[in-house]
Image (tube, rainbow, N blue to C red; front, side, top):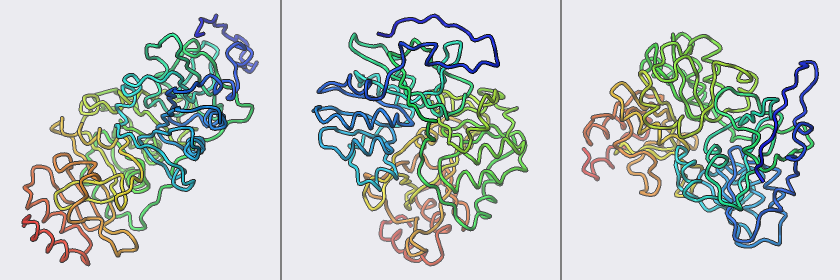
Length: 440
């Protein structure tokens, strides 16, 4: 398969282009694509997941010893995780998975490394979600590239197959893209398409302290990154009085889009990818803004999250959230009560990239308490397996009670500064714990 195709450009702009008529030999159903999976296969899929393909695969009760890698499983991944004859593997767990009670083998791999992971562990069958093919044979990546580029473009063995699931709802985004002859088949779902599903995000009611801290820590002309989460993106979106901010991020979210719309983020002073907003994943609320917008470029994860690429940006400011931080300055962003809740995503890549530049800074925003104020998010010590960012990685922590500068601080200073921004009701207990651990 994977033969070349003649590209015919539609000249009459009033005639809607129909890719299924232009390349009918490529059009397949989700069931046909799933029928190519054999016993013992490794199957690799995209972010967002190709849901129709995964549903069709979950119906294959005849298969055994099949492992399926789904970067962030949603409904299709959950369907596989509820069956006994598939092993679902994922580096990032999701709300949909938790609500369905589906099981997955957690694979600890950074987002920047997803592409190389696919090369080290080559799947025989790959299926990625893509946008609508264009008349010139370009196949846009849809709402995410992440590690998908490696699944499509890697060197193939003779029996390897690559399928694309075309979602007509996703926008045409400038930047990296595929070609029609990269695929052995394109899955045509006879629906209007579907919006990618992402976890719900919540926002604290008192944003002012966080916005004030970001205003102090982010200078005009800085390049910013926002983690996915209500607090980080909503707080950043209120910096509309800033001038000439740049954007180099993992996820293009509502808050960063609002900065561009307000004129605060122009990318004019960016030293890496000047005049372009760079990202590898787009959230649905940004689709209309991104569609055919030449100021915004989607790139693979090994570019957007490459440490050298990130650190080359002017005054890089990486803004992420955390579930909890201990008195050593260690961050947990993925586990709750010792159970895997989500995954590392790209947060660790941005943390490490900030250590490579004298002008960069990593910033963690976090409400001081959880569970209605009864539990402190600043704790004595995080369990070993729950540490996402080490005490060597974390520069600044912000709660509604202040800013703790941890970079270059001693162990004692880290503990004292974190206790100072904890909720007042928990400071005495944290101080006693710090004394018991001989931190102060």
